[in-house]
Amino acid sequence: PVSPEFLKELPKCEHHLHLEGTLEPDLLFPLAKRNQITLPETFPQTVEELQEKYNTFEDLQDFLNYYYIGTNVLINEQDFFDLAWAYFEKVHKQGLHHAEVFYDPQSHTSRGISISTVTRGFQRACEKAELELGITSKLIMCLLRHMEPRECLETIESAKEFIEDGTISGLGLDSAERPFPPNLFIECYERAREIKSDLNLTAHAGEEGTAQYVTDSLDLLNAGRIDHGINSIHDEELIQRLANEKIMLTVCPLSNVKLQVVKSVSELPLQEFLDNNVPFSLNSDDPAYFGGYILDNYLQVAKDFPHWDYNVWARIAKFGIEGSWCEAKRKNEL
Ligand code: ES4
Ligand code: ZN
Image 1 (cartoon, rainbow, N blue to C red):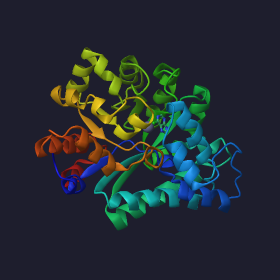
Image 2 (cartoon, protein in one colour):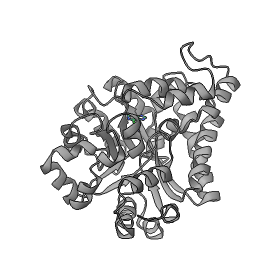
Image 3 (cartoon, helix red, strand yellow):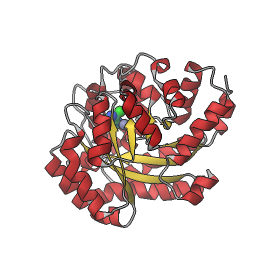
């Protein structure tokens, strides 16, 4: 097995991280206080009780219920900045060089917070991270698939200026995967591409959904990569296609265990992906909720795949660089 030091030093990229999912309990409660937000009575009232709850989620929906309540404590531009900056500071110490991060504008606009407040707060943290930590980043807005597609179209319109000026460099699709298949969002993805023809596109698919959700995200939404995608393994033809078209899967090992998608990291089809030349990266998804940031995910995979040598890990690092949406010049540096 490779050493923890090697994994720390390995130049890592993150492609699947929800900024709202970096909200640690020890920031959540102070923010609730600062912003005078009353949490529901049934919500844990202390950091310890909340950490305890995070140890056992039934499934994706059980997690999302907590995640959306937590999100409500974020109000001011400074809150969004503080959240993202705390994330960048943490992963800087873990050897992260490049981050393509998600956020959910609708979680905030539905509470009366403008998309500009959210986007500018996050954007300022991204700029500071590049300047002071050397971490480059991209912001990806996600549509909540449990919302009406008509409302999602309005969200895209409200993001138009940020898409046009490049503040938002990609579009994704998250929240409860089933029963909200990709075909519901065909118009949304078309409209986003109309605003910017080279907008980067991705979608969560094949976490709790079937391989068909992955295929449909490629065919119907034109996604250039797939978030999670692990259920692709059940479709041999799809596996060959991912390899041929170099579609990267952004796998989230600790998340998959915490949400009981798999029993352990060793069950993930990572060896099969390697054997079939399917590009994948390792990511943290919602690290405050799932018990680990980027390096913690790498360390757990190394524990569960102890026979992987330096060459295998170098190959994974390379998948991540090539699957990133940054300019060729930056890829060379990485
Ligand atoms: C998410 Cl793990 C996961 N799946 C779908 N949507 C999400 N939003 C935040 N984390
Ligand atoms: Zn996710």
